Amino acid sequence: MEKDNIQNRLIQIGRLIVKEKGAESLTARKLAEASGYSVGAIYNQFSNMDNYVLVQNYITLDELSRKLSVAKKSENPFVDINNFLQIFVSFVLENNNLWYMLYNFHLNNTRTFSFFYLRKVVSLIRIVNSHIEKIIPAAQAPERLVSSQVLWITLFSLSAFLTNESLEGFSKVNKSSICKLLLDTYISGLTVLEDKE
Image (cartoon, rainbow, N blue to C red; front, side, top):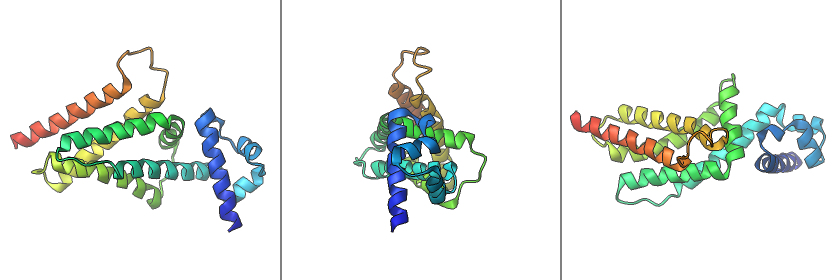
């Protein structure tokens, strides 16, 4: 029980560090200073900082999944998938430092992700797929799944742009508008392709 309490405290303090100062501020030494635990105690709980970041990313994915799962549904699948996008973009912007940490972990990690972690990502793709299923109902299930995966990978890639301010001067277009245009263009393309078959 004590171990769980230490882990939970370290996780909560680490989330605050990342939210307030950014992912680059999350080091074992800084976490030790902020929590009052030694660096050795941190490694005793998580083995290494990669595992610690992985746990943080579990939590971030779970929080996003919960927000998307409770989204209101309408009779219009195009409205629903745009609502999905709005929730996703808002979540990334509101949690930009945590999301940046998650994105960079994927980008810079050479390890094979655990089944547990991949299951969390798959649950997000399933939410996308539930929308795609209503938009292109005549498509075969494997085709819809590939379309959902492509859309998720595209949005995930674009999320780096949402969390990065270095491109602010490059374009005056609102970040949310770029995401919406991309989604609407992709969905329009899917429906056109379905009509041709």
